[in-house]
Length: 220
Image 1: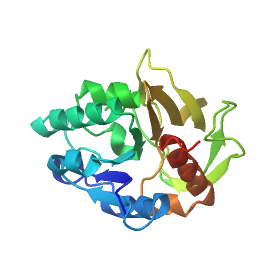
Image 2: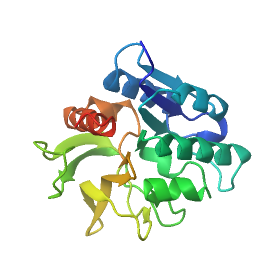
Image 3: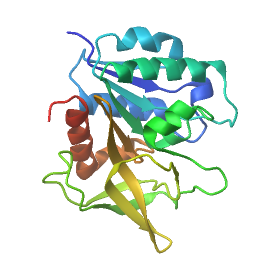
Image 4: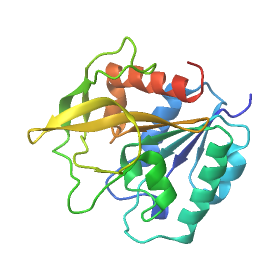
């Protein structure tokens, strides 16, 4: 059975001390594909080969650094090639911290963690609200509860057109948490949820994740 989905699960320079990326990558793999159809890759040098023939790339990575390394540029080249071929991208949670200074990554996702401004309230159970945006991902879905971190005051890039699907409220303001966009023939979703495996115990988040994957694979 061919590989349909590749999860880039960050290790080393593409991880941090706060996120159990191996745990969450395994949880996502169980939810988005059948046995043998999902591959988990932990190094950039293996990514291009793994993506050959795949329809979906999931990036579950981070970084405990502010400077770029050579692997970041290599990841950018692989990503650009994959998207040029019409592949779908799902960036999860701390992916907005990953690949610092890589402009192509920031412009693709549409946001980045701004050190000194971006934060999250203490992790806990919270309500995630659906917006009024009409989108195939959210048709028939509603608000849901999840145990998770809520990223707040992400740096949203000017000029990047997105459909904001889910938000949360913090500090008297509304903050986007999940959005979708298209780049040519490719589809991209950022889901800011997913700090640890408890996030994927939420039926509402699981339903949303499966809808996201269906859309990214051009199945809806």
